[in-house]
Amino acid sequence: MNHRFFISRLKNASIPELWHRAGEAVLVARLRWSARGGKIALAVPEVDWQRLDGLQPPGIEVALPEETIAGLLKGQRWCLNADEQSIADLEARTRQKFFTAVPRSAAEPDIRAVWEPARLQHVAALLHHARGLEPDRKKVFHDAARLAVLTWLEDNPFLFGPHYISVMECALRIPVFFHCLKFLDNLSEADKRKIVEAIYRHAWWTGKRLSLYSSRGNHTITEGVGLIFAGAIFRKSPAGGRWLKKGIRLLRQELDHQILADGGSAEQSLDYHRFVLDLYWLAVDFLDTNQLGDCRDFKPRLLLGEDFLSAFRDGKGNWPSLGDRDDGHAVAPGLSPKRPEMEIKGPMCRTFPLSGYTVIRTGNGAILTFDHGPLGMPPFHSHGHADALAITLSKEGMPLLVDPGTYRYNGVPDWRQYFKGTRAHNTVIIDGLDQAVQETGFIWSRPFRTELVRNATGEEGQVLTASHDGYQRLKNPVLHKRTIHFFDGANFLVKDTFSGTGRHRFELNYHLHPGARAERDSAWWQITHGGGSVFLLSLSGDLACEQGGEKPPSGGYSPAYGVKVESCVLRVEKNGLPEEVTFVTAICTEGTVDRKRLESLLCAI
Image 1 (tube, rainbow, N blue to C red):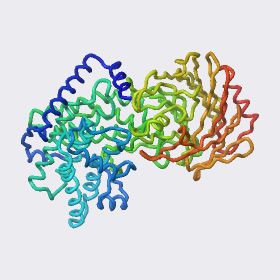
Image 2 (image 1 turned 120 degrees about the vertical axis):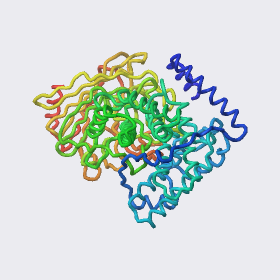
Image 3 (image 1 turned 180 degrees about the vertical axis):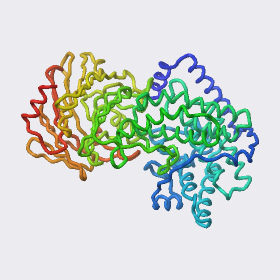
Image 4 (image 1 turned 45 degrees about the horizontal axis):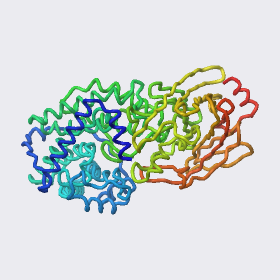
């Protein structure tokens, strides 16, 4: 895949980006040569400790279960469900290797899981939980946090080992180091100096390798936040002043780029949207509290982003796993920056035209999402999935028809391809091909275009029609159009039609949550999960219920990064000319509906 990665990068690189990449390559080569001596020398300026003491940390909300806290005190780390020992083994084998020499083969642990405990967010959790505790109890937490951060610094010399490959990871550690300086009352002067030096080196490295040009995304925002914290600490030095200004400039630059004007995510990922918004709230609160920059103009766009997310959120605070999800957090699992509480609205139909989603809430607690948006953030669409015109459905906070999630980024190429691909989503796949072309695990080519062609309210309810052109690239091209009719305040008709040339194989899939039970009741399928229950009926061919499998990958569901379980799929297939093929599915959230009524409604769409 490496050659495809580099070819894709070159195709999308401008002259300034090529110059930027060349400069990075020269810098890395120089540092690698210097590393032959076993250590990278970098002069660290003095810190104004009085000014540092005056810096106030941003507000953090803590909601950690007691069992999690007990585990962290015993040395447990968040590692995205990977084997902790395999991560420790890789670190031990590579901590004396310059970061470019760290192996990245499929035989090694998923590098995303390797990086997770090195974010040191377990240290942040210990520190924030300890605030307000009695002195004796606080000392236990502070001793554990001090040992954890100093041990990590000892075991991970600058630019050696796997934790300096991504500067985003370096930037995400900087706020943790800052909180150690602010909260730990058991640090010696030597300890403080080690942490200050780590902040400077992490910021220097981040500033030299920013994610710019075609690499812009949530990494860029993370790096900007890291520079802001480091810049505040070192703002009396020339480098610190530059970092602070650069960090604010990056966040201002990316605000409208990554948070669309309707509040949606340019990356087409709800979980990365939450991550990005939290990074912004963290930085804005820190800047405001310490009067380091005026970010009042950020807040209207951030509030739009929060409103967008609240539209998807169910009564339990969850939303469907649309797009990539790596379970990353701006502060730590169970910790979040202070952010405004947004109202979860009742029955409604809301369309977000720029991000390309419609969310329909029924009066009985069901939520349907309809994806008529683009593939992801250009030019690589890295965290988007080929899920054009897909739907999800939950009821009473229980997911029923699901987006299967992400599983893993690295080490399982077949499953990575599956979870990103069209067959894993509740839409139609044609000729077994994705709606766009997967070049690598993070790069798409031939992205589809979508269009919402109808959004009308009438006596019989709401009707939405959207199309995508992902299969126009075929030798015999096909256009897919999906209409959703929301009627009686609780039910849906989903109609798929096609236009084009040549004979093709059309496959419609509905993925069920692994906890859901599917039972046949005459022509209807009843899908039940906890207190949520809906009924499905295909008016154009029987839906068969199939269990997921390994070879080829099918029916997998990922409730969390690194976890995959089997689930069932309701599937119907047809072969023929595009105009000859139609799929119609009735989805009823309050009992079944008479077939004649469904057919009469169908005539209207």
